[in-house]
Length: 228
Picture 1 (cartoon, one colour):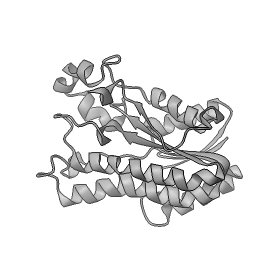
Picture 2: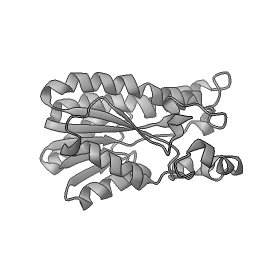
Picture 3: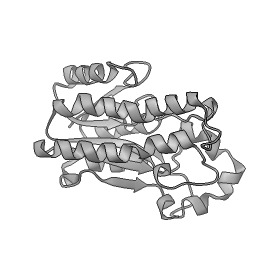
Picture 4: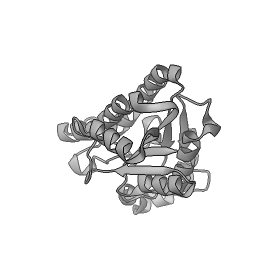
């Protein structure tokens, strides 16, 4: 399997690359420091680079994400214009750009996996981020639309809705005493943050032929967050 992974500079994306290579596949990673898919033309460039490096594309993983807290993301009444625009550009628009660029280039039988968030559908008093939640929420109909369009070619598109994952982006939350004491409530299956590997394992399954009849799905990897 030959896979383009967007978001290779740490966190879930880098672990996905390791997992793909460990299973005998090939992975070509891009990030904001190499090829920025969040800007016009960046996704097309990344797809072309991956094709040139790997020879062809069987899969694509989008694992880019950003928190808008530092820009003023928060409740709707407090969220700043800057946070709204930037969070949607990175977390939503970049997925659209990558899907548009990659879907025509994927070989029949190919697979796309988008890493989303449990906050798309499950709100919480300690995670009131209107821009982030709505940007991740908008990925669900986008993935379903792409899955429908790509199905005649045998190409699958799915979304992994991750809960609180132990990554640098989640450091603020994971270091909050209030959230730490609520972990069993937030994620009742285990009461701890998910590891990047746990998310990468589900991504690997969705990339594989074992998930050959699964498309347009939202798969939670959140320790039960969505059950609340």
